[in-house]
Amino acid sequence: MGWVMGLLLSFSFQHPESVLPFGKTLVVSDIGAFGKPDGRLWKRTEKGWTPWVSGFQDPKGLATDGHRLYVTDVDRVWWVDTRGKQGLFLTPRMFTPRPRFLNDALVVGDTLFLSDTENGRVYAFSLSQRQLLTTWKVPKANGLFHNDQGVWCVSFTGPARLYRLKSDGVTTLWAEVGADGGDGLWYWKGTFYIGGFRSGSVMSLRGKEPGVVMEGLTTPADFSIWKDTLWIPLLQAGELLPVPLNAQR
Image (cartoon, rainbow, N blue to C red; front, side, top):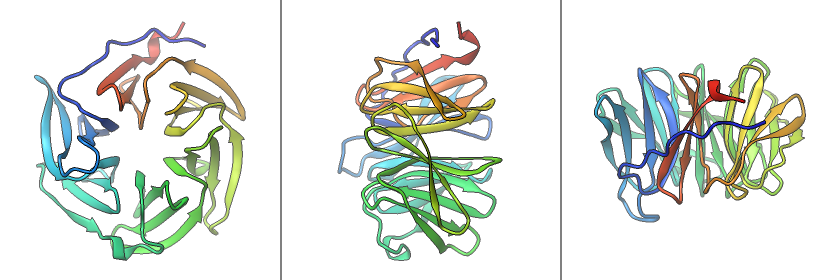
């Protein structure tokens, strides 16, 4: 399977890590310089990509409940509303064990799921009560997504593996993905799309048989599908790659 490549978009992104639809537009998290408090969010506007919210360390995963964004930032989580107002939502002490490398985020109903790649955990928090509900063990946990079969997590391993998280805290291995360093994860029209950060690829998974969608990318990170387009942050390249899905050939 192959795709017609979209045009690379590069404004002033330094290390774009995650892209997510929010309201009627897209938001990108930009780590900036690693380990420095220069991380920010960008918003897509009619004039292009505009710096929107700053004051983060190394922002990565994005999730939304429709009213707020939730942004992972190393060992804590921030909230950001539609006006760009921000506040601290979860502190390191609210986790057990304490987080070391929070990565992706996902909201399902009143539950906020967070992956910690270094601890090999997925945490579930109540949004309304801001309390830890449960955790799952997933080796090198990274990308998260939800469909009618439940919550899924891809591992930042070689090869990447896709896991299903059950309500009783049990993690079930679903399939090996065929990529190295599982990162982005999205489910669209019956197919999982899974990014390989280290292998520079995007894989498809329909059932349990992996296929190649794209190869030769530079560090594809946490992508999204929006308006029939796959939006892929290329972290080390500092670029955003839009790939129209209706251009499949």
